[in-house]
Amino acid sequence: MKADRAYTGDPEVDHLLFRWARVVADAQGWARGFALSIQRARKKPGWTPSAKQLSVMQRLVAELPISSADSDPDLIEGRI
Image (cartoon, rainbow, N blue to C red; front, side, top):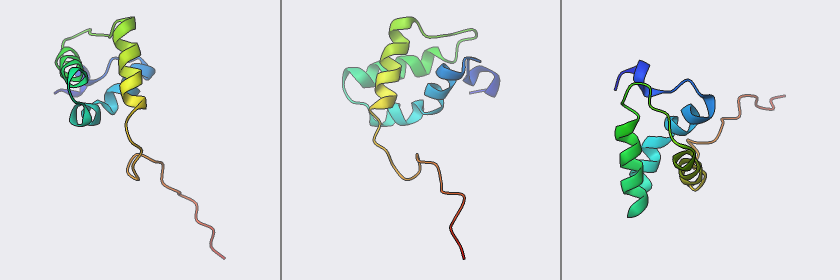
């Protein structure tokens, strides 16, 4: 996927799309079909999710398990 088509320019949607590969990998059943359909649709020029799609996307990303790779690293260590 080309970078110019990877994201929409809307910061909220772009944040969801940044984590979308993880959603696709973790989803099962209906959620997996939905995630794959979004993965295909996002490649279309000018695509943005509908309000209903955006709502489901937000829920699926929010349900992702937190892992150490997802959390922000502690850049400042207390050293004496």
